[in-house]
Image (cartoon, rainbow, N blue to C red):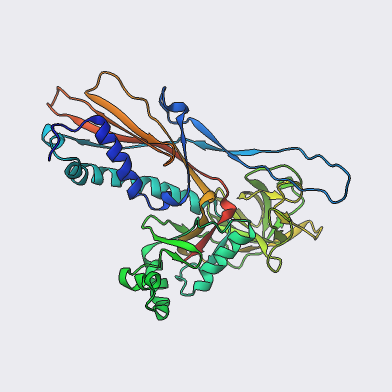
Length: 412
């Protein structure tokens, strides 16, 4: 039976529910809702600080050795206010909630969800240093994805059912086809055949297909000898930072794009708890944060993670004392490559806040849920100039890398 007229609370609550169901990548990351804006309303540029737990080194033997407790935080700037503007008629408001949701809300909220997801995947690609696969070639072996998972293991990511593999459509098609020989009359595996997608829980992770996976255009540096100066101030010996600025020296033209990755000879990745090089002395991957270039000269490049050689937040081991070390780039041909991603839920975070409710309008309401980490506002106002009743649906959010080391890109 149709409602007499849909209320603002029904519309906003339904819009929030639709948004939750439309999200793909965003559903697999840490989400924060800051209720400090519940009364005054949030503004673009406001900052939410998301805390990271501290780490300790520990001491062997009976003597007391008190360590400082250093808790770090990641600032998440509410940088994006995105909205969809439409017009609800009184006839629309006389529909049942289900009909109204299907006809009006779902198309509008789908655009909002798509924008949030796309921004999240841009953040993931730009901040994830670990990478596997071959740019320009979709991986056909499950080993590629398992290797990505091994990076998560080595970085201390728990196996708590919160790992995901987000792949774009063509990569998804390739891996499903490559593993078709594994189809057996098992409910989960047979779903791959029935749906054309990897099973929800396969190879220790939840698989999801997302058309918003971004592509990386790798820089140009083929045939060029490049070295890093390992005695520069960018190599930290204590404390914590999210980035380091290091000096590279090239014998030819080098053009690095944001999102490019490279390794430095002799700079090994370490497990965050035991601070020992993991694997068979695997080199630490670094991702370029801003574009940089040089032609036969020295130039600076900002990378993540920061190079931290000692202390509570040590992330590399550098046994050699050489002042320079050779650079190895992940890709050297300028290839365009989709950046699929294997990650733990804590790798990235999206923060949302309540927008201010304006006065003097036909109706204004918002729905927020701390458990979902989401908030959406709906405002409707009559316009006398053209006898219309426009309506807008708004969200205010910001993305940030929380623990990007708990993610690994899978190039295709």
